Figure (cartoon, helix red, strand yellow):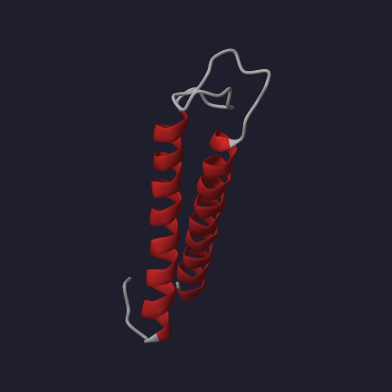
Length: 84
């Protein structure tokens, strides 16, 4: 049972890291100008996403939440506090 618990924690950590990386990449991706875009974004230039300022904030918030969870669980583990 202990090995299943360790596998679950490792899988959960991988999901959290993937979520943080995906959120950070999408935050940067939405800001980058794109000349082939069909519409201008709300900031007035052609970007990958026409909803640029709002989608950037949403992506940043998602990356922040994933990063916060990773940091918090690592700090709890460092001080030997059980959360499961």
